[in-house]
Image (tube, rainbow, N blue to C red; front, side, top):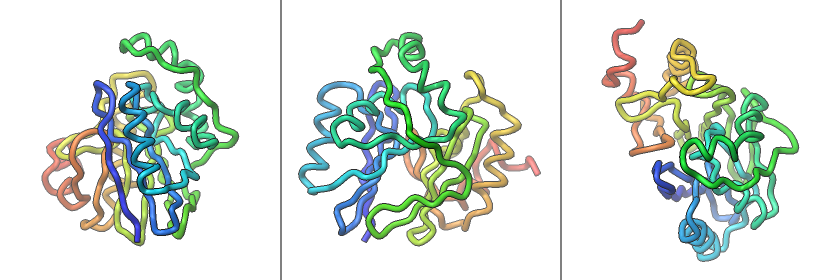
Length: 215
């Protein structure tokens, strides 16, 4: 049985997700823990549940979403997985961190990259990778078809969409990604965003003010 644990870490309250099942293997998505007590909270949960992290995934590599990536990578001996277009954010993360007041760790870089249609496995689970740029270059979503949910990062929120005024943001591209990659999913698909509460595809299709009336 798949279970999802959600933490909201750092001053930007980024949702850090841990997905795990009865095998004990788990995927960590957007390791946003920054303060020492946040990293300890994450580690304590993993220890308490006796989990084995086997996947470290980014929805995108804005600094607030990757602040704990070096801690997770070094603690659990796993390299991050992300889209190749996110690499510039990782390589320059210390500089980006200074802009937002973070003292960022030197990043651990991926050994290989992932993209549209890839299937990632942990335990008895599979996540399908969806490429959804617009908020940031290399933005990815992770769809679990069996459980009916998708982790979307900052692409889509409850009654909102990702900002596009940061480097590599593109409003038209973001809207295109949402309509072509996310709103085609079943209405009852749970949406787990990068910030704030979960929602559903159906709710956002019918009531999101940024999306209704566009097409």
